[in-house]
Length: 227
Length: 53
Length: 226
View 1 (cartoon, rainbow over the protein chains, first blue to last red):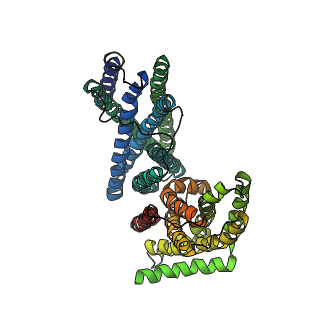
View 2 (view 1 turned 120 degrees about the vertical axis):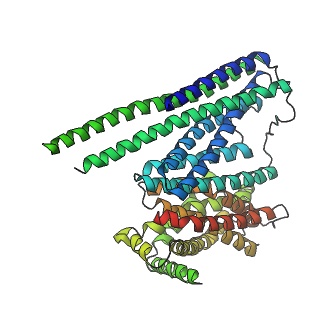
């Protein structure tokens, strides 16, 4: 049953992405000043939104673990964070390539990029810490506390870097896609967001199943050593 | 404008590569986990048989 | 008041042990001085532009030196199962944590105050011009650093690779406090009074301290006891 759900999600996501790719490449007109490169937004923005959604949901899963002490919440939180981290990485890579063309630099220290990167740093610390703890409940507790601290800190970091950068304006300005997009150009973004979300959920389910297998292995080992 | 299209393809490729690499990592981990599960299960069965003797 | 009494008892214990052995202060102070020297190779201390950023450099030094103190904080209790004894004592986890925060705060502030004259000499800055405000910034920022750092020290105390994990986890968390401190210190050390735009950094420091102190006190029992 589970495998069927996962397969269905992956197929749906793949189909959406393929159909969308066709729309993106052929039916959407070129943007006035940027030419072809702006089409990266159809990957950059959905990846960013997917990763935010992931981190956000994972924080609630972590809180649920602290409330109920059910290890499945911790498994869910870890799986969600991992997949969200991958999508965040995609966001930074596509953003960097876009920046290379538009701004001329691979990286700029503007508020969004900087705080997003710090977010990635915090979550890589999260994964490193999970590796360093063997006992499942201890690992779950520490991960949950770290998720909560990271989520609160991310908001503060974002705000403070925004203030910092408005005082020292960088060489680069934000590209505001909001008001300037023709109607035909916006739709593929939402379709891609849906496709990415489906893909994210599929990957999360796969990871969670792997974590169940992992804990089964660990408990079997403990049983074996009890002889 | 041509250069922009070139970089657009780099961007698309990069995004897809990251997803592909991640999926491959997951698949490899799945294979490793299944093999280890089988191994541990066999180890437990052997031990149970030993103690029954 | 019981809370404070228990917490201050823990703080007194840590401070007494520190005054007698002087391990953390010595290590931290030497480390701070070494980094100041290293920075002098990277940045020309006599140039005017460096004098403008000197306040910022200072906080990098304090953050690095502070990690040494914070690492020791809970690690020193691992010997002879002292940590288990403390957790089993009538002092609650939150009191234990808060006491250690106070102790670390005092030690780190001492290291900072001892490094300031040396910094003034090496980098030729008249840091005493706005000493009142500078001290306020140091107190607020140091409190923020120690609150976060001590919490993470408690979290990482039983981990393998503790010395690696603590800095990796803690520095991203400290960024807002460091940013506020750097902004204000750069101006104060260079001899300018903070203007109206700089009030936001004071507010950031206070908000950071309040938010993370309450969050840490709420979470620390979970971290220590499980």
